[in-house]
Image 1 (cartoon, rainbow, N blue to C red):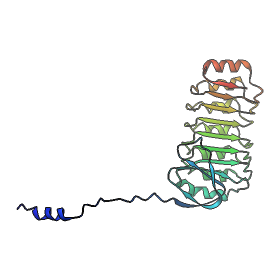
Image 2 (tube, rainbow, N blue to C red; image 1 turned 120 degrees about the horizontal axis):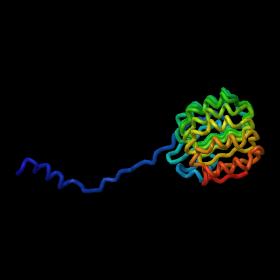
Image 3 (spheres, rainbow, N blue to C red; image 1 turned 90 degrees about the vertical axis):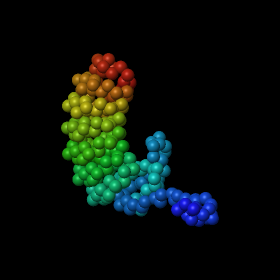
Image 4 (tube, rainbow, N blue to C red; image 1 turned 180 degrees about the vertical axis):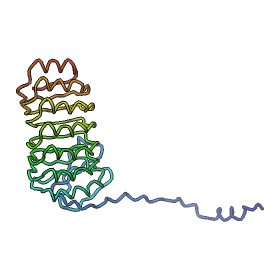
Length: 248
């Protein structure tokens, strides 16, 4: 008898029932969101899918694997209430943040977005108390792919120097009355930009458009309500960017 015989006999007499492993689905994490607004969810990897409203915040929300999130800030929110955004920096699946009509938010309040490095879309619409200095808080958001800067009357073309550092942008929508030649110069480094809207920018001229000729991936340019853009400037831009569709 070999030295393993006794062990072999023991194995032969043992039950041969299959082993079944029970794998539990990961439980959603809970997080208390103190910033007032609306919290939305959608499947991760499906940006075209319509978001569903998951909660009205402040509230305790569930973070589930495979989901991406959007937060729309309440228009009456204050700088102090936006301090709660600092805790959302831990939520890497927070993809989109929207401040629409948030007239009480100043540069101090906007400073709380600096840690939201997972953001891909940011909308600042009708936030009249935000200035050029406040836009410096966007610099750490190097993953941004889409930015809306509309009706923020405290922003001038000098603030676009900060926007020009967001080199991952694919879409940029500007409706800033003060944007002109100098402001457009700050956008020359946005080499991944595919869509640019300069809506209601009366200081944009043909000379300013010349600053955009190096944006070789640009496919769409909206010049609606830019009354000082001459036809010649548009023709020259199309010659430099033949695949770009220009709307006027």
